[in-house]
Image (cartoon, rainbow, N blue to C red; front, top):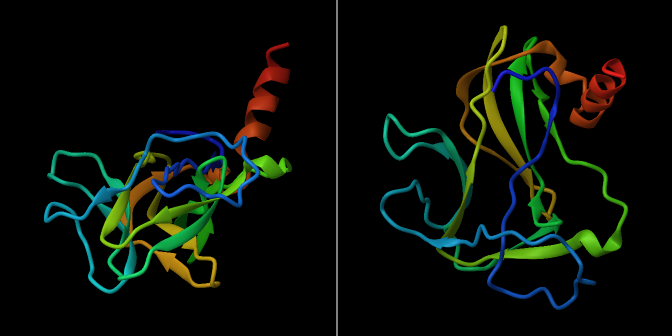
Length: 176
């Protein structure tokens, strides 16, 4: 994916546990958790975020797994988790994705990842003029930040500054 803007976060998930405190009206997802198996990286006694591909020919995917004995409750906005990609550029990690601002209270709810379950998220294969390393970041409710391993990718400098909706607005205005 060779783009010239910062992409909106896209890690959507669903939960088998109903959030009775949610106002309702949030956008649903069909990405339900799957039980742990020996095909994916799974760490016992830890919550992990891992970039992994099931075969060398398969595309990369991001896995959020819960190897603890406790269920993990995560805040979501319209079923989107607080996960973004960052790129190692100019000697620092910088976001190349963002979470959109949502003002509707109905969008807020909690998703539950039970013990020994994981979510799988397809990720874009970023390409661009700058060589970079890409990792993913998840802020947990307790303030802890999880980081995935990193992989080689390419990005364009605009991915560090121009948000997707700004880019689309500029494109629409330039074609009028």
